Length: 461
Ligand SMILES: [Zn+2]
Image 1: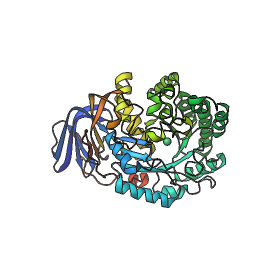
Image 2: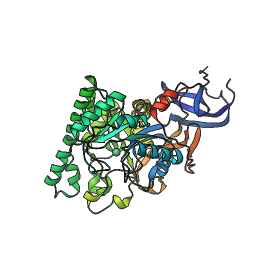
Image 3: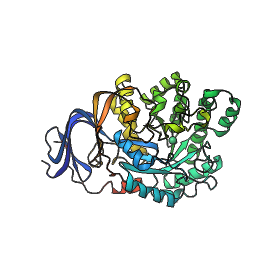
Image 4: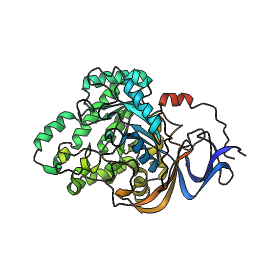
């Protein structure tokens, strides 16, 4: 019998081996007991009834600082509303990217002060020094380094030349740093932008075809094979891209890939209906590609699904000229319910498989597992109570993100986030919200070192 538990959450627990009726016992922010339902007691108790008790989602691709009006505080409130208990934030902040240890330290302090959920940070590198700062950035707590083969902005979000990428991957290999890539080939896109200058709303997609993405992925994978560095391909939109990653992995490369919610739920026709609102990089693909991507998700070719959240307000999206609209969508707070609804309910994707993509694999790839991404003994008590039967309509005015809109407005959704705990503390509860600044900066290496810190364990009887 366990005494002195801070919290007990009782319900249908999504444990590693499947759904189990049980009690989770929490003390000091960690899961210290997993027992038969109704057998634990604690200072606080939550009976989830028939609801599911899930591990918090680890969203490995978030941009809290591209839109300064959103920032870490507001974006992590949106995360808490969506059952995301850890975000890994991208370095391309406006006006300065996180490409130096002092900027990384400053952002880490902001996360400690303001975040509602836990925050790990991607850093990035300068364009011309071959990633020489990677060892310092890793020592400063970066979860990894993100780079781009496409120039979105010359200083904030630059293209790193191939030679510097090769040198950077050698630095990364030496210190075990994960390097994430935005993979689109700059020369192809620039040339096709000229070629399709008069294509109106279709110009954006025509200038960034699947070949531009797959070409860049193939080049990155060669560098990964040549150096042995751990490499992650962000926002893969094509089944071909995922197949290239799996092929390189079978040849010994340490590679993984993610796709994003919107590449599974939206297709290129959105641009005709919604103009700049539907603009994203890489662009939305045709409906056949969407179906192939679902197959790649289901068969394990894709490791993770992220939101690629960015909080652009409609004033930067719904503009007359698609070319001047910002690229990207808000998505933190809708990813889990939408993928449950469209994946588990409508496409019979096994819940355990979805949780691997949203929780377990991202945590593993970032060095946060088994503290994050799993409901198991000694893990952080990052817990999401999720009502799988709730039917609701997604509406712009109910959203927490400062963006104030969603590309999924009007969608009928099955399944809803009810309560969210970060390290045992309630950070979001139903529609009322809670919004505590309970989150903190996570340095994966420090976290791994502390993973074995003593916690009393009680096994399930
Ligand atoms: Zn992104």
